[in-house]
Amino acid sequence: SAVISQKPSRDICQRGTSLTIQCQVDSQVTMMFWYRQQPGQSLTLIATANQGSEATYESGFVIDKFPISRPNLTFSTLTVSNMSPEDSSIYLCSADGTGQETQYFGPGTRLLVL
Amino acid sequence: GQQLNQSPQSMFIQEGEDVSMNCTSSSIFNTWLWYKQDPGEGPVLLIALYKAGELTSNGRLTAQFGITRKDSFLNISASIPSDVGIYFCAGGNSGGYQKVTFGTGTKLQVIP
Image 1 (spheres, each protein chain N blue to C red):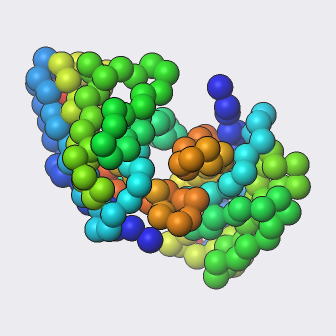
Image 2 (cartoon, rainbow over the protein chains, first blue to last red; image 1 turned 30 degrees about the horizontal axis):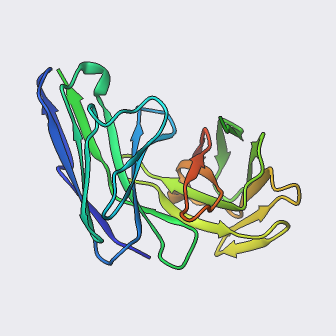
């Protein structure tokens, strides 16, 4: 299994600013994923990040709002741009289990936008 | 799009009791995953199922991949207080990579 860390663990941000969340995996992985989880809700996939190519976004999510980088096989970032209070949520990254059809998750980043 | 419905939505049980929860889909999946999420944490993988009809155990947890490939079940035997949390199912269809859809979640509370 992969061990995944995220930074920051939480943040309080002002409306109109941007926050970049970092995700680090302890081993090389093919795919990394970014999810959003509203309080008390399930997980919604934002995008899939493959190293060396553009991220693939799910319906309702766009690159201008959630730009993603994947510079190597162990690291990815998600930026939440031009934030509004509606962006307050938990943002989770995950990575595929290499050789297994599974996903392992980081601890999440708790974002509050004022 | 695909939707995964979990039932029950929430449950209170007495410590020592067995628990059953299920997950149903309108679409077929090739993989079923069960996760547990504690407050303030990310989901932790409990069991992965890869074959229709498969029954897999992990300690006191047992999960089954439904033969129709549209459902899955998770059972917890002899519940303990640390079983408290939200349990999510997730269905996957590998098409070059594992993209999964998460269920609505079952919140479990255990009364000591």
